[in-house]
Image (cartoon, rainbow, N blue to C red; front, side):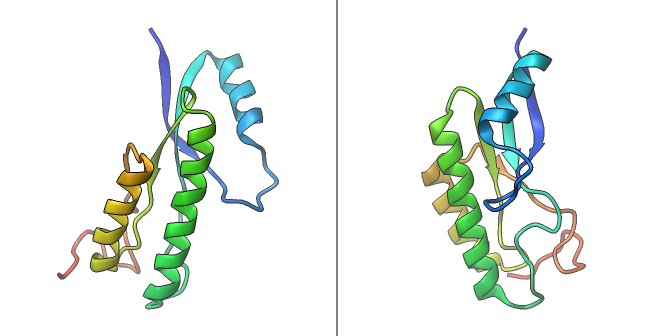
Length: 120
């Protein structure tokens, strides 16, 4: 049976904590066939109420992860980030991320302190 790591956090560019190649070496040692990448807290909403910045950071982050996955399609899949609590921006990002090949979406437990209830 193949093992798949579905909870693997990636550090966007600039992080010196590893590379896709070093991660592949590690999962090979552990007998894991594939990792599903996503980012961790705080997500992509870095400045309260700055939806423009959040949309930009989200789009860049998703594009970077998609590029890594396209280089190693047999080893990585990914869960896209969404710019919540920006619902309109999130709907746009869903379409963009699916076109880039996202396997699904990572949703934080809260967005700006809002736990799972967003007004449209």
